[in-house]
Length: 229
Image (tube, rainbow, N blue to C red; front, side, top):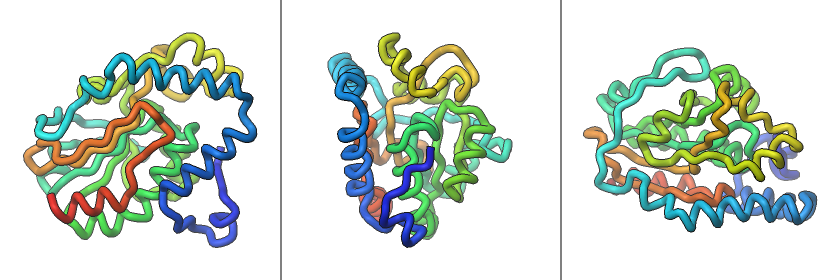
């Protein structure tokens, strides 16, 4: 699905803040998605918060694991290679089927020139397959690497992975969100959305982790941290 606002449709590029873009998408969901379905997604968020998922994730000062994953062009990208060049911004996202993930990555794409001018690289990681990442990059004109984390192994090392509960799986199936097909396995696992900045030594300089997938950090906040870190 390609979510478009009236402003974006008219200009080709949505120049609003990410907060405003996501607020518009939440408003559409509130208006058009049945309340009982909204309640299911809210329950999952509540349960993740009650389990203290954020307390087990990598935080500022932690050393990040090294990893090598294939991007949308089937090129293997190594975190060690990227860190040898400078700092690294990582966005963990759920997949191309998630309108909030799409909004975040499109907003980060607009900030890519500033990120690179700061001496940093940008990548995004999800459990979706390489072809799914290719379709997403092509459809949304993303100019950075979308890495496919098969089986959520890297997400697990960052403490971000969780299993979609059975009651939410049935909602996804009815909405034609077939995670086994999209991700290439039957685990029904997803990462909690998270954004990290890693120093050249692999130490976490910034971490934003939120079980509420409708909330993401502003690219301006990432740029500010890059300017001061």
